[in-house]
Image (tube, rainbow, N blue to C red; front, top):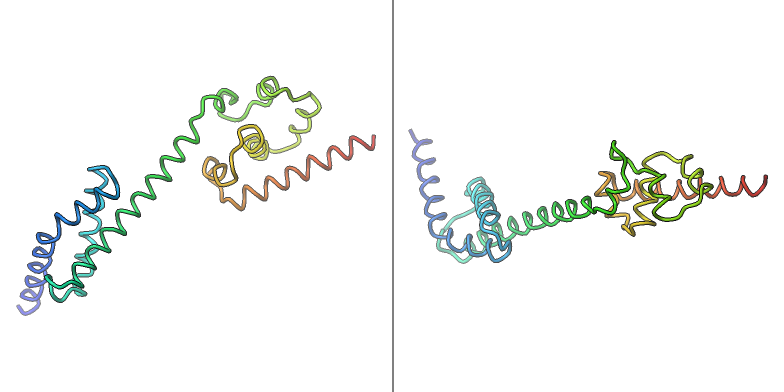
Length: 184
């Protein structure tokens, strides 16, 4: 019976906390996210966190509690905003019509179409054929479309370091192919 009473007291204090600070939480989330639905998501996530850590709250009316609630909702809204920015960046980077025009039916880069559009010679196209499809894509994204390694890593779902290393290895391989061709 004692445990049930304690749980009821905790639930009542959390409900009072929610009622008291909900308008402030919604306003702060909307000011950060500028979107009603995302701000409601932030408020919901913050409420869950506040409920989970309700044992840290002694006095609902204290300045420390207000600061704690403010910090939780602010951090949650910023977290959601960052996720949305990453998602939006990825969606806009992937959907360039110029880029997709160079892809074949399987979605892979069509070297022939690329050569026709950018004027690569047959020799350069033959050298590119020695590379894997992933390495060709990385070089094309980097030098034809001007993407950064970070942007390429998001589009190809690879780490930035992996893209950088593959880029370096592809250039080294092309360099060795050129050196072999010069020796002949």
